[in-house]
Amino acid sequence: MLVVDGANVVGSRPDGWWHDRPGAAARLHARLTGTPALAANVVLVLEGRARAGVPEGVTGALEVVHAGGEGDDRIVAEVDRAVADGRAVAVVTADRGLSARVEPRATVLRPGWLLGRIEGNG
Image (cartoon, rainbow, N blue to C red):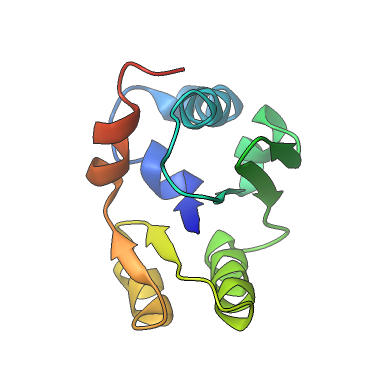
């Protein structure tokens, strides 16, 4: 299972995302949807204004969840759920605090890893 810190991935590139957070979330969602074989299950966690860009729900192997408060708390909850179900899990983030909260239960991958796989897709 792959859990994507949407805010962190979008924020890793200075492409003007801050002018349209919902649009940036929708573009990330489209790229994730258009990229096969990232993982058996991919969970995209959105927070704040970005939640308006993509509704919660499942599209193929991609599930979108909205964080009611801090996105990090929802990501940790998703990791806990996956581990309890016996699944291997990786989290895509560059946030050091979040990384410390999920390691060693989850592998941490940087946004560049994900962006390198979805470039040109979606």
